[in-house]
Length: 163
Ligand code: PNS
Image (cartoon, rainbow, N blue to C red):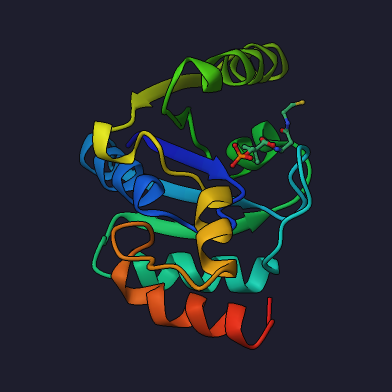
């Protein structure tokens, strides 16, 4: 059985993330969505608990997908879960340099791991967690930006400043 990890900050999960996870779930027997407790590039707005909850609600019904938090190196998490593949989505060339670097260092740290890039569908190529937060903070419409199951919850979190 091939196990894949799909890592990220998911701060919060977007429709673009969900699309990549659904596609990965068609390709591998088991997919573990790995939520970094403290990602290296920027401090998350939402607590790990909320990010996990948003993902779990968004991915209900995907029977071969699980969600887990991790701290430390991604490859150590992958090893512990017996995963042999890392799945990352690529939206544009701007993602590529960073993702290329990550794939190389992850391979150096754990040569058995393969990174597989899935190209974002055009309708999600503009979408990021940062743009979602920017829209939400000004009370804009989140339709088609975040999964339907969590839209109300995210709007409420911004209204009540509860992250
Ligand atoms: O959603 P993001 O910001 O693209 O996710 C980045 C993430 C969490 C996948 C990346 O920061 C990561 O793997 N962090 C764990 C630490 C690690 O293993 N870094 C790579 C070796 S330096």
